[in-house]
Image 1 (cartoon, rainbow, N blue to C red):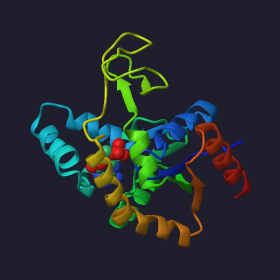
Image 2 (cartoon, helix red, strand yellow):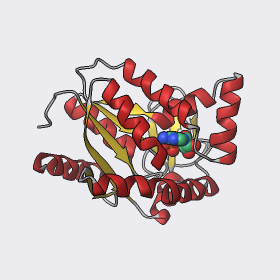
Image 3 (cartoon, rainbow, N blue to C red):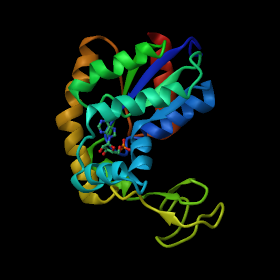
Length: 222
Ligand code: AMP
């Protein structure tokens, strides 16, 4: 069982590695709060404001990383919403070397300590294959996998009948670019935490439950 003192975990991995699924499992099993930086950014990018338009241009058109000051305020804001005694799992930051200090200082200021950084590895081919099948329901938010949860593009949500759509940046070209950014920008972050002895590395080429079981067993060992 994970120690329930106020800890922070960081989840890293390329697109489609299953970070959100693992974060959800952490939440379900241990009550750990999921801080999903990408989801917060995409939600802000979807708003019809000047800030939303700028974010959408960066995320969806240029497919670049968002400036650090925005990451800081999103992270601070999301952490403020969680009771300080509750552990959190941060999904998607730090994404590049200059965010390491930023993220660690925000974690520290929130009264938590970094417990471990978990890296889920998947190949570029697997990343593209998974993401091209990844959809969600616009009404109930259920995550849906093509051919597993519904039969063909255009079908309605099997739970609520809502429209089933794909993320704007989940095209093949979008995933290739995000994977390239991951290799270029996030590998140095991984190397940093590995050197510090803070990294747990797991293969993402298995079922979500198997990956989760390995993460938990690795966390118990350290
Ligand atoms: P994700 O949902 O994690 O794939 O994130 C969606 C997009 O948000 C990414 O492609 C980036 O443009 C941006 N993003 C997410 N996390 C970060 C971060 N830590 N730093 C900068 N940009 C980010």
